[in-house]
Length: 377
Image 1: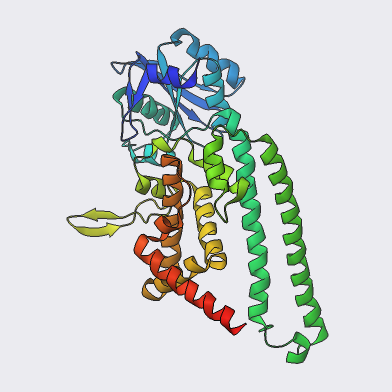
Image 2 (image 1 turned 120 degrees about the vertical axis):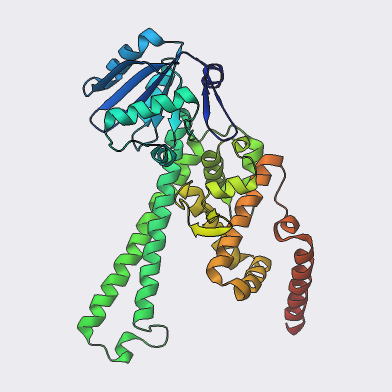
């Protein structure tokens, strides 16, 4: 069964990411490490089946659903171990919808909580068209995406060891004088040197693993849209593996209504709760994709270091709004730029990135600075 065709036939997804049931039965599965609870009901809400399965889970799942095949949709919460259950259902012709764990929890209105209530709640939300849909990456791309996520984690670890060495240098003011010159005893110097050496060795080992992953990913990844890949990879600072990561983590750009929705998905928009025109708190800031958030924040940092015009723009914004806000604005701009590149299939445009007026002003200042340096030479 083709995934897209089967799902479009058996249920529809509205603009607000809720579902409308077009079949006679809905099933909710509350999945855990050792077992799962399944709850099946018909269109009128009548409960037809409920059971907890703890052994031979794949086989029992298919046996339970077989009488309803072709006339049922299964809802599944996006817990950490959803892959096997979702794949089993889709490979055997049972349409499955992945539910957003956070928004599912917000729709529970029972005083008590247990596995049966959770499964029943999912089957009922499917039935009434209130099931919050999460993005489910296909299995043939998911394993490669997992390697890209592992690469991001390794790069984070590499950065942490780099920052540790910088922290040690700041703690002992090593930029001004050696530890011996500052009066520290040999024993203390040996302790600090060992810490610096191990941190440096961990950085080198992590980079070796990152390079190994890069080589494998570039050979293994399915580049379904080479035009988009080449557009992203051509941007200074992105590179081949980062371009692939953006493509794999974003998926179909058409699933986002606009650039603001995409930036929110990338965790680059600060959520707000308001009531009667007043701010009453902050929303779920952790909702979204942490890997895209890391990618675009890294691009912001690298572009400040390596692109003079962006560094100049960032410096001006930093004076007005502070470094933290300025960096967030720059990361948001990178996400917005990438979104329009994917949506419109257009190459990176520096003038659009900075804005026409600001680009002209910064370019004139940069050219003048370059001319002065050449004149001095």
